Image (cartoon, rainbow, N blue to C red):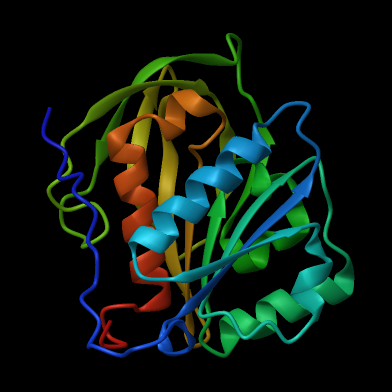
Length: 226
């Protein structure tokens, strides 16, 4: 298996300060009964910092209602719900150009469907987790050069909105299930990655690479000259 897993560490001009670097806001919500939120928070902070972001972590979705000014918002919520004001503020930030990366169980809040482009429907038929092969679309910058890889992970069956582009899938008895998709929303970009349930995902180099690339793509980090 070939996965180009070397972090891309942007070279900043001498004297450049953190104040001039793009910011990322990682928002965690809900509880850790079913999802490993705290491992995700730690791993996300490290990965995003490697990609050149000044990264902040918020416990609870209330931070979305304030003027955070983040170039990138990363959501990982479990059994939580956003208020109408929080959803509106989030959608407005993305519409104005912020990048959004939503992970794993965030799509359980069906009210985010119009923004993210997918919603959780069920775990599908049992067993609710297994080892499967992740196949990727090689014609997109987010997934190019990453070979298919195997992962043991929780299953989700999701419904997707028209117009999303699916970049990774797993095979099921009924066809294929989307694992990664992207879309445009106003002036912003949105990426949803179904993976990230626990350390088995965060310990997989290809998953880590997908998260780093999703952050760069959604925030247009390269276009910002970083």
